[in-house]
Every structure is written in structure tokens, then in C-alpha cells.
Length: 243
Ligand code: ATP
Image 1 (spheres, helix red, strand yellow):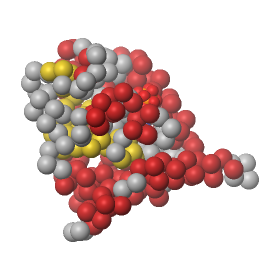
Image 2: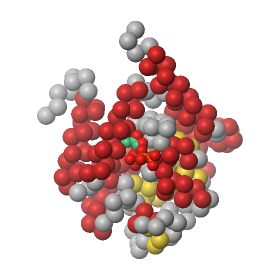
Image 3: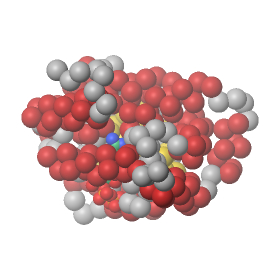
Image 4: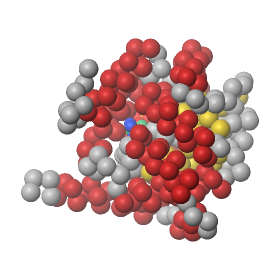
């Protein structure tokens, strides 16, 4: 039992949850390493949602709400850390949810689907087809899901697939603490923030965006500017770290 007043409470709870889900087969062992990379970058932004991430979050809400067919693509880490948060976002945005895995097996798809459904997520099911131009199982998706989507929210994505989804003409929104990753630099919109802070914030923004505000945010979207702002935040913190 982790004491609630431990200074690293949130981080320890996340690690415990990921380790449990890894033992259950929901999280791939490689996913634990990916989480570690994320934690390091979270330190650098001060484990809080920055001003530029807040703008990205508002813009993400606007894009999901204005999309013809928004889909949230969920992997093992996202399911382990934020199943309830995905359910809440699905509720307000009307997005479909599809399980899509780098380390794909039928058993993991089944486990993750059951885990998400246990938290109130409606998960798309069907026969996956190789619709994303990638030479391995990451190319598999549902024709009626990611295959048909015009906007895809892919938290914790890898660069190749992000690029392939963009090449298919889809708007890709990602949540990635590393502003230097290929995903961050390839996505239409990158939210440089921690998953479990960003998802509830997008959900809240979906319910508070004022009419007209969404269109304005989408018109102003400049992902390179948002990434530079995130890097500036990190540089600023490092410069004053020991003061
Ligand atoms: P790329 O191919 O885009 O360069 P990568 O090889 O860094 O990416 P992965 O190893 O797939 O990508 O890791 C996924 C990314 O998710 C990492 O960049 C990491 O910083 C980020 N990440 C991990 N956990 C979280 C989290 N909880 N919230 C936000 N981002 C996270």
C-alpha cells in the first residue's frame, strides 16, 4: 500500500498499476520501458500541464468535436493507466474506441478489450484488415474504425504508425511527453503532457468550449510552435533547477 502523502504518490501508483497489468498480459514488457521515458520528460516539465499543453488540449477537444468520425486508438499502456478516463472522453466526444497494439496478439486484444469494457468503454469489434501501410501487425485496423476515421487520437504512439496515418490523410492527435519523438514531430497535433492529466482535461474542454472557439483554435493550430514552447518550458526549468 503506497501512503497517500508520499511525494511521488501518483508516479508510484502508475508504476504499480503498470506492473500489475504487465503481469496480467495487458501491458507489454516493452511498454514499461516506454513509460520510463515518459516519466523522465514529465520531470522536465514539472509534472504539471503547461500553458502550451493547455492550448493543445483545447485544440484536441475542438478537433474531436468537429470530426466526421473521431476514433481513439488504445494500446496496452493507455488501457492500464487510463481506462476510466477513456470512457469519460468517449462519452462527451462521441468517439469510437479501437484497440490497436504494437505487440499484437489475439489474447492481448481480448484482455485489453475486457479491461476497457469493465471501465465503461464501448470498444469496436470486428475483423481487422491491413489498411495502414505498414509491413507488420501495426498495419491492422478495423475498416469501420480507424480505417474510416478522419481524426484519430493515438496516445503514446510510435513514429512510423503516426506517419502512416498522416499519409492516409487523417488528422492525428497524440499525447506524448517527449517533444523530440518522431511521433510528436509527425502528428497534426501533439499534447506534451502526461496521459492521465491530459485525457480528463480534453474531456473537460469538450464540455466547456464556447461556440466558435473550436474553429478559431483549429485555424491557429501550429504544432511546431507548440513543440518549441514545450522545449522552452523544459529549458527554463533546467536553467533554474538548482536556484
Ligand atoms: P517515436 O517512434 O515517436 O520516436 P518512441 O520510440 O519514443 O517514439 P515509444 O517507445 O513507443 O516511442 O514510447 C512512447 C512515447 O510515449 C515515449 O516518447 C514516451 O515519452 C511517451 N510516454 C510514455 N508514457 C507516457 C505517459 N504516461 N504520458 C505521456 N507520454 C508518455
